[in-house]
Length: 208
Image (cartoon, rainbow, N blue to C red):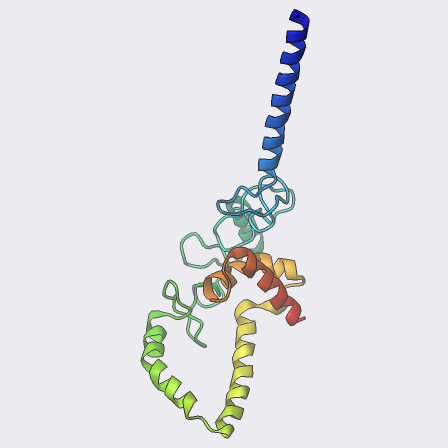
């Protein structure tokens, strides 16, 4: 009877350990980034949130690059470029003192964007003032104006290409890794970062 009891006890302990192991493995298959339920690429994070440095499994830093803070600093040093003036951002300053994510999107303007907007305080104010008259003009447009508007739209699209520097990337994944946050922050069509990432990949494919 005692042997039978020990046997049952050993089975119970084994089952408990297996269950605990299963739970642990299951937990590790989900990205450790808060709110992310993607599968783990390696380490504890998915490809969206893992550092882009080969062999590094740290979480990607909120520094505007595809790297963790340590490797972002190493990358900037090796490339020798001037970083954006916004605190914590290590992206290359391409518009005066700011990167493409923090500079005003109005052509020729290198001022800092207003938080939550694509424009600086000066151009955002002007944009708000002219918004109503712009809508009225569109309603009363003639067919000739519509044709002009199409050409203007094409020109505007080219500016958008420059905005994301899509032709500087050799793959959809590298473009999405670097730009999906901009799609999520500054476009209104995406409900979450996953959708913005997929949209960034599609954007790259559309232009190559």
